Length: 214
Image 1 (cartoon, rainbow, N blue to C red):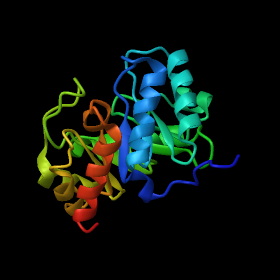
Image 2 (image 1 turned 135 degrees about the vertical axis):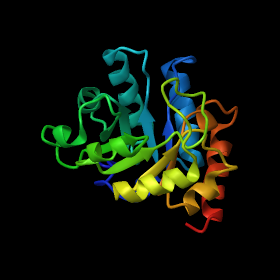
Image 3 (image 1 turned 90 degrees about the vertical axis):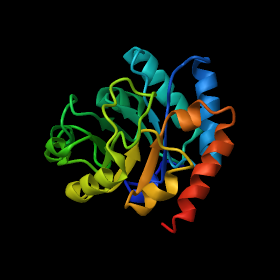
Image 4 (image 1 turned 60 degrees about the vertical axis):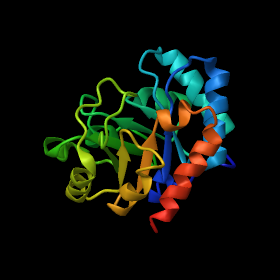
């Protein structure tokens, strides 16, 4: 099983590339994902809300094949993640709670949980990390909610007590400020997958993160 990522480590969260759509097919999505990884993405998250479970399994396996040294997580669907041999799942507030998932997933399976306000903090028990946001206004997720801003992000991260990833309107322009606020990493959709050059876009994000000194 050479190349399989190790058990969860917060460094995996540095730059999470979240997929957008299959507008250019599975091969096209994988090409954009690979470019993001070559530019510095440290985790891939498969998010295809409109696709069937069968298609998601196929795409997850394809992503694992092109990027065997970094974790591939599946958004919402732990069943799809396990069927595809992915390394974990990221769940929202309407999905099965991390504590319940932890009882059925294999050892070392990574679980991320979304948090948008104080009422959702308690649901993160059993998770390895949290994704907090949207920090800024975003058009990538129709259900993202109202932007909370950097100060609120930092406060929620402290309350959760877990490695926290900022999501929502993240770009190279605000990456340093987010890292300085205590983020363990950044999660991006359009900044990478809608870029004409995902590799360069990932490099710009990583460079901005490094400029924060964290």
